[in-house]
Image (cartoon, rainbow, N blue to C red):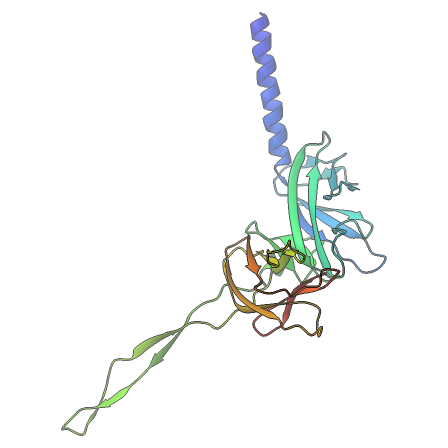
Length: 287
């Protein structure tokens, strides 16, 4: 008899765990707004992507420092959004300044069960959010979509580069007849020029290495495709006198790459790091 009760207890516990996980799995972090205007709130959007309502009473969010953001809704309806707001200054890493933001957002259930996590970094302002697109990848969007789907905004992202095909026709005179005979058209593949990719960020830098070691900058590709950064630049404070350092890197999707400097460029007591594309347009900066 005791064995029967024990088996029933184990099966019931397993059912509750599996059922709880299934319900929680429907909750997703969907959009993060870390850089509002003055006197406005930061916010995090949560989405229920299943056809069942979920009781989220007592659920909460935290950032990497452990600051708690409460969720006021009690029930999240099927395929619906809810937004948790917090005063400005929570959703950014304190070791960055200006427009650079980096943090981690965690979603927890009532028993401190981790449900979802999102990590972001980059240059933000009041017109930009970090959002999850329908393909499951995260991007910085130029159009906040609070309490709405991100699908339309995601469609405006930079497409992957393509090759253009340019046919040419060559006329060759036929010897002895005076007639002109066209040859078969030749197809020439012309590779697209350098791409000024979006979603490329400075993630880390070594500005004061030990004697004999080099300065370096780590760059993150937050796209879901590989990028080729051809003749891009790293520079310090604008118009500070030093020349930008040119580099080229291949970075796979959602990956990091490091560029080492052959000579020193940064001031050890404080400086600005700027990432420029091949036309020296600013893509990211870090202080």
